[in-house]
Amino acid sequence: MKPNLNQLLKQAQKMQEELQRVQENLVNILVEGSAGGGMVKVTANAQGQVVNIEIEPEVIDPEDKEMLEDLVVAAVNQALENAKKRAEEEMAKVTGGLMGNMPGGFKFPGM
Image 1 (cartoon, rainbow, N blue to C red):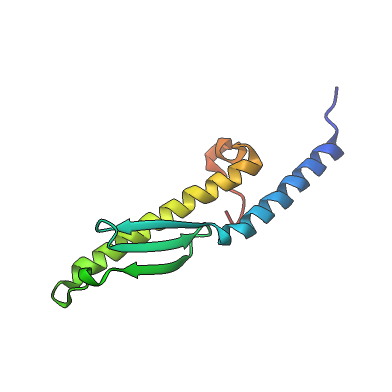
Image 2: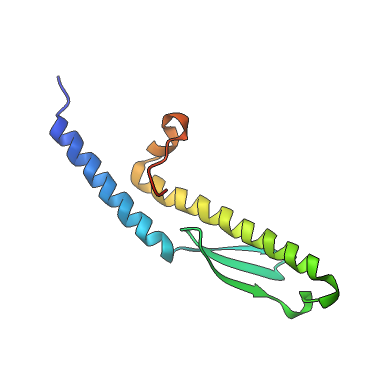
């Protein structure tokens, strides 16, 4: 029994359209990263864009600028890592985990 090529192409096109829809919606999925016990909070969307940074006033010390910079970097990195994980989860809902099983960690363009 030969696979129906037209059916396979239709399924691939449908998956591509669904992936595009999910990718467009990633902008609306927000995640957070924090550092310093929550003194610095960063919100990012699942497209990996930082959308907000909150810094508690008590962590702002003009004498220790480097500490604040380190906290911001740590919070941003955590938020971006959370965004990446969330985006992968959303894409896996469409692909059924198929993308993670591809050789060489193949990723579709734009993902």
